[in-house]
Length: 259
Ligand SMILES: NC(=O)c1ccc[n+]([C@@H]2O[C@H](COP(=O)([O-])OP(=O)(O)OC[C@H]3O[C@@H](n4cnc5c(N)ncnc54)[C@H](OP(=O)(O)O)[C@@H]3O)[C@@H](O)[C@H]2O)c1
Image (cartoon, rainbow, N blue to C red; front, top):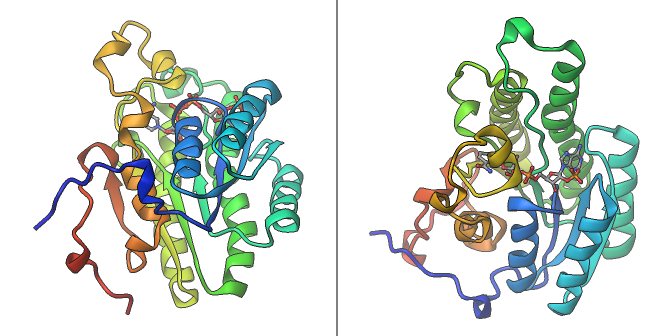
């Protein structure tokens, strides 16, 4: 039997964990960083623009957690290297990685898709996910533990017109999840992927400018699955795909054992 378990901040599912969340300056990543802090985690957060990121860092400090906020482009391997190095120098470990950062790119048909945009979207969304996962996985392998959560999309499993490089990049993220989950399983590192569904953020607004945002859930409302996958509650779960808005927290006795 499955139950929906409203997650109160007093549960502290992520106590003593260090979580790296990319793209945490707004939208789903920002809400996730704050929620993870509420759940007891220390945070490493990044985005390309400083001011909004620092605001999130201040929130997390107010929540009583430690935080590193670093300006970094996940599609730049030097930035990624510096980010992971700083995180390890400060916290000495990364328990959870959430590959959340991404850009939408132009909503045009492939026949019109500008080459530079194609390259930029794939570099950030796909190569960025590869780069940071590789850097963090090398560290997690030494500790023989860790949880990696990739963020995909409905168009990561179904191609639709005018989703171009974004859709292709998310198909790639789904493939990375399948490959990494099998390669890292012997090292007791879990890799799963989440489709957030439609969420009230700047990216959604850019994709659907005519939509009434009030009809969409706020980022804060779709986060239980991320807490679950980051926590030890999901310690045997790897290589799985989750729909954030359909997620129900499993009962304790339903948990699978790692084998
Ligand atoms: N919202 C939805 O309805 C929806 C639906 C399906 C999937 N998703 C996925 O959910 C995730 C979060 O989306 P969102 O709606 O919250 O997007 P958003 O509001 O546009 O936020 C994206 C975040 O990523 C950061 N970012 C973008 N490019 C980056 C880069 N190169 N390096 C580091 N950080 C970068 C942005 O900050 P900077 O601009 O400062 O870098 C921002 O903090 C994405 O993976 C998206 O594809 C969203």
